[in-house]
Amino acid sequence: MRPALVTAGDLALEKDDLPTAEAYFAESLQLLADSSRGTARALEGLAVVAARKRGFDKALQLLGSAQMIGGGKTWGGTWWRERLRRTRSAALAALPTDRAEAAFEAGRVMRRQQALALALGGNGARPGEGAGTAKLLSKRERDVAELVVEGLTNRQIAARIHVSVRTVETHIRHIRTSLGLRSRAHIAAWVAHRQAADLQAPNPS
Image 1 (spheres, rainbow, N blue to C red):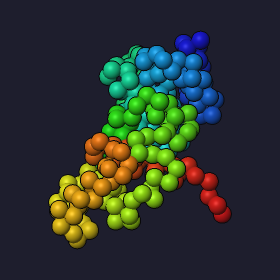
Image 2 (image 1 turned 60 degrees about the vertical axis):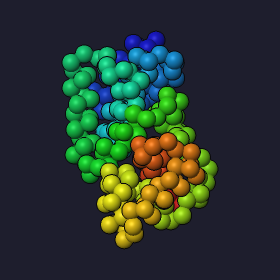
Image 3 (image 1 turned 90 degrees about the horizontal axis):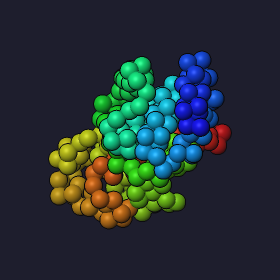
Image 4 (image 1 turned 60 degrees about the horizontal axis):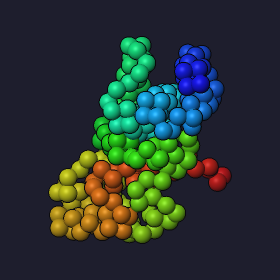
């Protein structure tokens, strides 16, 4: 079934039928969630779909996750690798460099189930993510977390928000402790997820 579903997804992409392509790749992903090769290929397909829908953050997260799950390999021939290259190039051109790098890294540090949740349209319960986790942080700490995503050093963050480097270090330590995060990459993943969720949330108006 996997080759048939992936081929159907590829054909739908060729026709620019994004809803159909997304459905086929998602079905492939659900059938082969335990296969690294199948999972990586389906994530790549969904990344292409996301980029064509201008969901560039999500596209880069999925590409990063596919790279890790697939062990750095891709299975689709030269033509597929070229499609992935164009997808990543489009995302890098559309986003600020720091944000694009943070999105890709966020995908690389995701666990498999988190990547599946993101790919299949869920909130992708990442490290530290859950109902109300943002409320565990002060507004200043949320600001610091968002500057981490931009790739700024502690010294640069301190200069940006006019506090001492020691204060920034304290904020980052509290962010990691409060959300159960292990590294700056996980902080970037948490922020990237919140931003993606905000974009996907229905407009109350």
